[in-house]
Length: 195
Image 1 (cartoon, helix red, strand yellow):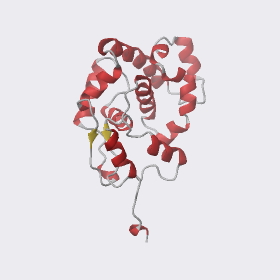
Image 2 (cartoon, helix red, strand yellow):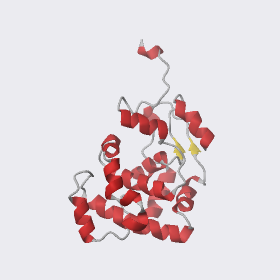
Image 3 (spheres, helix red, strand yellow):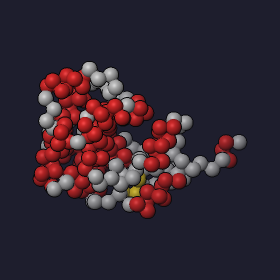
Image 4 (cartoon, rainbow, N blue to C red):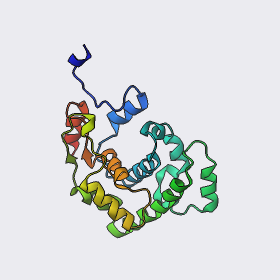
């Protein structure tokens, strides 16, 4: 019976209201705001080895703990601030990831200084525009691509941490550098119009 019901959304959000809202409002929307790009970079790094719903549930706590994801502020976090974060039960208290966030904020600011904006730097990996894919089922989603490989390599070369190619691809999906909504999803065409 359910086979006859036409799907209108990607399957991955399931029945989780927070995941559905994220899918319907944010995932895949092209982002050109540096603060928002840094937010996705931080959250995708913390997601490594965990589920996205775990990260989403703690997102507001992350926002408070990391000064609304402002890289200029985070870049100046000292040891006592890092220790304070590691005691914060509201976030994911992974020492390597917390330290990586501070390092990445410093490198992010370096890139802003070099390119004018981080946006200008990061979007070069998809030629400055959203790459429109045609995914028909969840299994069609890759964990990495040539673009995410290149992004990962370049970010690592510049001293960023927790920027493996899989994390980079998740970032590209979140920031709308690729449209990986299923072709039958209501958001697929909406994102294509934004792109």
